[in-house]
Length: 225
Image (cartoon, rainbow, N blue to C red; front, side):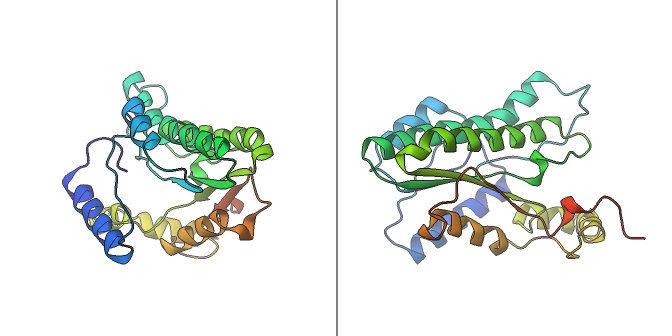
């Protein structure tokens, strides 16, 4: 479910991905919603049968202003997209799980940006740090009902958006490779696999965790010398 109006490139990718999902699994029923519209999203989620899994993956980047100059509207936009939409969806889905006495798992897609800061990233970092705290709070309160919540916190991932930035000549890949002990940025499947693990019964006693997937970047306090 997309969050807010999509630019042309992102809209094309979203439509392509949706078509691929339906082709791979015809039982999939895509639902379109502006996740920043909490009331509309709740109405659409309430109409669904109870789910046993949820992945909160909607989000946008936000590194356009310094901390001193970041306008309130921009900060609110990032919080709506990256944090409040996940809380809203989790509330609806988890409540239905609880009422149905169904054990389930919720995974928030967060970021290493919830722990480490980068220039001009106040709203993005606050949204991701908030998401990690929301993960812990939901896990605490839902655990007695057999409902788990965890977050996956990747570093830079080779998504279409990131590949577009690399194609425009930004030295993103080389900068990450220079600072990452593993020497490269993440591939999408390296984030997907931990999500599948956290959704499955293989992680039946794993909850409240921030699962960092960063190739060791957070452990590196200096560039190569």
